[in-house]
Length: 285
Image (cartoon, helix red, strand yellow):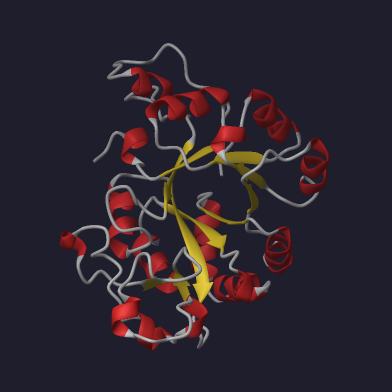
């Protein structure tokens, strides 16, 4: 992801709000603010991690869509966040009495029939779960890039990291073009997963997610091989942002939805803002 080098001065032609002032520069010069990263797609306005949420984020001109990678029982990589599927699908109705409802307990043929949309709104009834391949198909010829999170669900160990690396290795044209545009990265809460992926795909930027504030010792160690530190925005301040940049890494904060918090993070000079509402930053509905 690009490093923020400072907001262009003297060319602001319109200020629509305090947020716009913090996030825009000019109509004549490209904005230099943080990357807009659509959390699970535009998940505030469409059911998370579905094609509807991905496509809406693209229309809203998000710089990236952030997705969650898991693996089915028969080895298909799919875009799904929770470790079990009851919250956002009708899996209990379609497959009653199963002992567990993890993604890894079902084949892709079983999962492809689920309704992953009606929990969000009736307008999205029948919206299906999609695969990693589907996500790439939806964004490949757009300006929007991919930030893929390796699922931390305990049943996988580091195997999803290996599978994701192998899958991207099999898409050399997509990876080459996405890297040339600085529009591809992978992240994980699990350092072992991140290292496994980085070893297999050292050219693809790798980020470390953290709900807590990393220590300086941790930052120094991670800077030897990681490209991004991606902490929760509530633990992020100017000292942390400056230190991450001093160590040669980028910093993307999550999950930032409230306008005041967005303004604050932008003012700190973070490189990316992960949000459920990318239109708040892009000003495109």
